[in-house]
Image 1 (cartoon, chains in turn yellow, blue):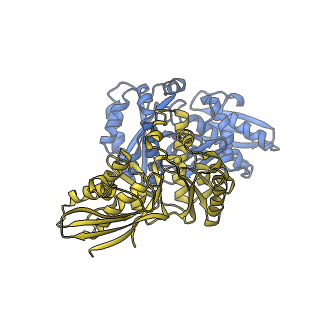
Image 2 (image 1 turned 180 degrees about the vertical axis):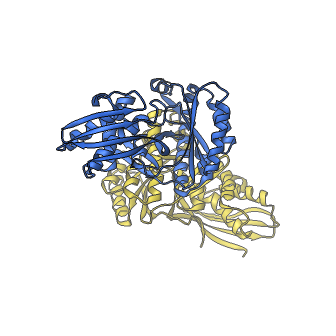
Image 3 (image 1 turned 135 degrees about the vertical axis):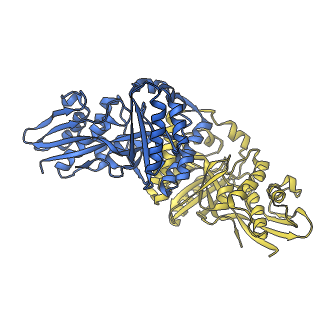
Amino acid sequence: MNEIKLFSPATVANVACGFDVLGFCLDSVGDEMVIRKIDKKGIYITKIEGFDLPYEAELNVAGVSALAMYEAAKPDCGFEIEIYKNIKPGSGIGSSAASAVGSVFGMNELLGSPYTKTQLTEFAVKGEALASKCEHADNLAPALFGGFTLVKSMTPLEILEIPSPDDLFATIIHPQIEVKTSEARAILPKEVSLTNAITQWANFGSLIHALHTSDYSLIQKSLHDVIVEPFRSQLIPHYNDVKTAALKAGALGGGISGSGPSIFTLSKGIESAKKVADSMNDVYSKTGIAFDIHISKINTEGVKII
Amino acid sequence: MNEIKLFSPATVANVACGFDVLGFCLDSVGDEMVIRKIDKKGIYITKIEGFDLPYEAELNVAGVSALAMYEAAKPDCGFEIEIYKNIKPGSGIGSSAASAVGSVFGMNELLGSPYTKTQLTEFAVKGEALASKCEHADNLAPALFGGFTLVKSMTPLEILEIPSPDDLFATIIHPQIEVKTSEARAILPKEVSLTNAITQWANFGSLIHALHTSDYSLIQKSLHDVIVEPFRSQLIPHYNDVKTAALKAGALGGGISGSGPSIFTLSKGIESAKKVADSMNDVYSKTGIAFDIHISKINTEGVKII
């Protein structure tokens, strides 16, 4: 096998009370990539469709993660990478993570899988850092492992796979505005009250328990973020209206996807997720801001060969 | 049935990263109580052995929780309560909770179990508040439900039963000094850094996952408290020496039990728990402070008829 085509999924990070640690993987949105083993040594990006991104491997997220793995593996070959990008950069659903994950996953497959998924995440972190100016794995982990993932620590990198109920669906609205990551970071408080911190870890522990026990009612009661949402939601126009409408339409809960501007909700069942999509559409179609809405089952597989 | 004798267990609250929300139940330490249904209406404490505590129901933790339930149930009878107290008040292993739980559990049994355990916890909260000057259920929940419990919220009261591995043992040292609850509260910071808060909920989510998956190694990696321990451990003499020795002897981790002065550790297997006990003994026997040490399996049953 010298060439594979793969689907590298979009992901949601910063899942409410799991800010900075919990993410999940989407099914219906993602990039496609072709990875090809070639005789000539090195990493070459040979095609990019969808968005205007740099071809120089050192300047491209997929290229940087590929180079990190290439330098570790020192294979007797090179790789060509083709990127068919569907996830808009800056949309808040793991666009850079999908690129970073795709190249290392594909190369690993073509080399006979010498690396574990956690090791692949370590390489992909280098690519992600090019895009987001810091090393984090919140989107990489769910893109590689699928399902819900908890990044327990970065040093050493420790990723936990959290089970989730079968009938859980995400509805995501992407308002086509820009939220600068630097601004989303700057708006965060350096200190939080101990009371709020306790509420947050009570909710987060409950959410992990609820995912283990497929307890939708408890997912609903746990999906609250008392720390970050009050600040970052100010950067997303009509955030409260969208969330209120989604909850009224039956969503279990939701929050800001990544650092925004996308807003995610979780629902029990596809019919509920569709009603939530309709409610989001009703709110945003009146705003004059362009947007798109995705409905997706939780993708338990992650990045895959197609 | 007009009389029952019961065992009301000691408990550990504030389990490391689960400060204020996670507790577990002990097997080897607890109070005994006799609850007797009588014709004469009212709540009467007729015997107290072990420690000097008030006989007036309104001034006694077991009496106050009993009265709370009695006023709700309005039964056509009264109750006598005998208390054989083994858990020293102020030791940090749920002495008042054991009293508060015993009376309502016993009365509920004698009335044909009209109340759920969560409802019993609500009554017991009133007794606990007499002792600790605030309404909390951190020790009550594990005493009533057994095992590990997560008090997700107080209003409404929501208690989650978290599974735990079969071979988990606690070793607890009780230095016979007084840590005033008011001092333990006053030493807590009002604000904490967002960075530490994130570390805490990452660890807490991991601990809940580890308990679900019986992953001892992950329990070990998750049992850290970066928020409260650095402050409260100052109130317990030789805290760091005890903890360091226990970890060296093989404990998975540990922390302050409740608001101290007891220190708890968790170990895989009784042999390991015994070695930890020896290591604690080595440290404390040199200090001149009186102490006792308990080893206990996690008690998954909670309060029970004997």
